[in-house]
Image (cartoon, rainbow, N blue to C red):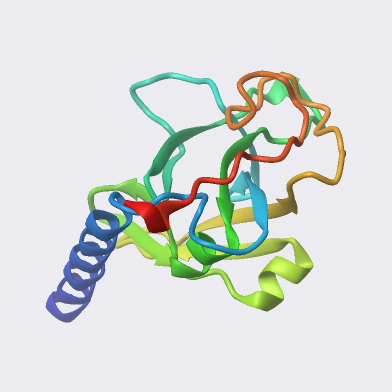
Length: 171
C-alpha cells in the first residue's frame, strides 16, 4: 500500500511539473497541423461543456489553455461532445494534462498513430478506480460542422475554422 501511494505521489508531482511547463507555451503556434480536441467520454459517459462548478468530470490542459469538462445530462441523448480546446501537432505531442483531482492526474503525449486515427484512450491512475478518458482529434479547417452550437473552442459557432497563425519566434 505504501509503495502504491508513493507511485501515485510521483505521478501527481510529475503531472504538476509538466503542467507548470505547459502553462508557458502556446497551444497553437508551435508547429504542425491544428486539431480540435474533444473529451468524448469519461468512463464511458458523454461529456458537456456545462455543469455544476463544484464537480467537473475532469480538467484538461493543452499548452497554455485550460478547460473543465462535465458529464452530459442523460437527456442529451446521442449528441456529440463539444470541442473543448484546439492545439497544433507540436503541442499535442508535448502532452495533454488530464486531471480528475489533485491526486488523480496524468500527462498524455499524443502519438502520430493517435492523430491519424483521430482518437486516444487515456487512463488516469487512482487509488480507488482507474478513470478512462476518450479524446478525439479532428483537423481544423476541413469545413466540417461539429453539429454542436456550444463548442468552447469556437466561441459558440460550432464550425471548424482555421486558427490564426501566431509567430512565436519573434518574441
